[in-house]
Image (cartoon, rainbow, N blue to C red; front, top):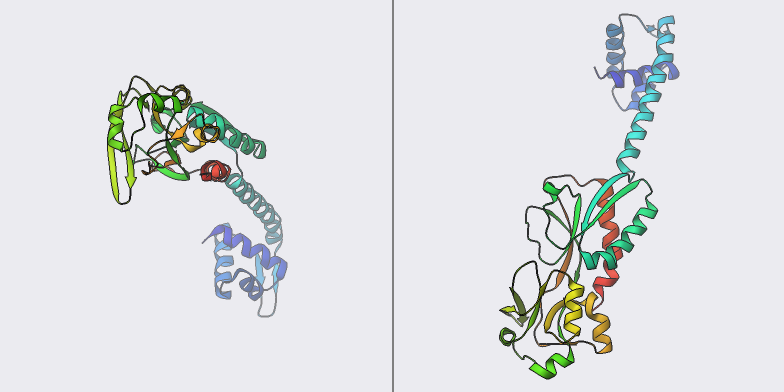
Length: 299
């Protein structure tokens, strides 16, 4: 016997005084309602309803039980409503890891709007460009620009930005402009990387992909540092459109190898593997996807 169903059937039987009426309301057979009531009486060890062929009468014990049962069902319905609200309401703590420059420029304003809208959400915001271990370091979500290095993480696409190969006019005037990707090997290339002196850049032209090993005097793990040195004429860099667009517009930088297409810079939200994404995390990811669209769609 499902005791909750039996309680619901019994209280409605007292109120409707009809087995058929209760059966229709609960969408079960009339015989099922009768079995529930009989099983409830057997469980309690007391008769709740006196039945005749034409009518039914609630016993004194049945009346007292009805009063208690309605309170129990009311409390249950309130508990269900509260649980559903808890499941759908955005509350709780989010530990979020974001890239330094992209995070400052775009994630912070978007997250601020999200927090203003959802006052029960708490946030721990950590900046860093290295690829962190989400599980070991206790992050709920990390925002990353570029290729996903850990295939075990759950990946949620936020957008796809364009990259440009750029240099200052002064650098090109001094060292010349490369016409093919292979020629980059003879240039000072400013590599945005974590601790490596050389990197591999790829470019597409038609169906052919060109891969070239590049390096130079300077590597940095901070894109604005790379941008500053590029504008100062220290070399050629591969940087995101959202970072270099103002300098391209004013002529502080120019594009290089325009006949070749560099890879895009996908932006993703990464969450730990095998873990159900909590409503607050899902809502934040959806919010970021909408908020970042204007910046990532500009070409």
